[in-house]
Image (tube, rainbow, N blue to C red):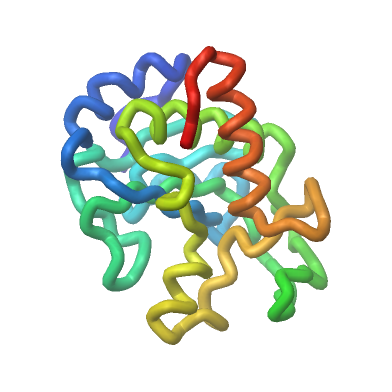
Length: 177
């Protein structure tokens, strides 16, 4: 269920207020769908192929985006990767499918993560990709979300997003730790 289409990051503020004291982690995902398959209540935020941001769950509610790891965990997803090919253990993707992550999605996700991490007080050490949690819980080969992104090779998707998030926060005069 889509609660709100976000036109400006400040529109997150009421949701941040609801999530303070509850959210202490952020998990990065891709949906495995098309660029415009955005109605996912399993995530708190979904970003379509054009970089448009949607809130799909209140931040003080538990969404079912990461098995056994949902309490206090904000799920942010980019709508992409339908038809994804094999992903090797090092994160190499053989085929990004018909709906690969777009540059607009990557930049929007980085801005959203920066804004929400600062607003909610989430440290960069507590921002993970879905694969991280899957490895901890023994189902890592089933969840390869954000292991890599086509925008930069040799880095994890998580590291790309967090690096960009730190840069955005600095541009706003805020330190993301």
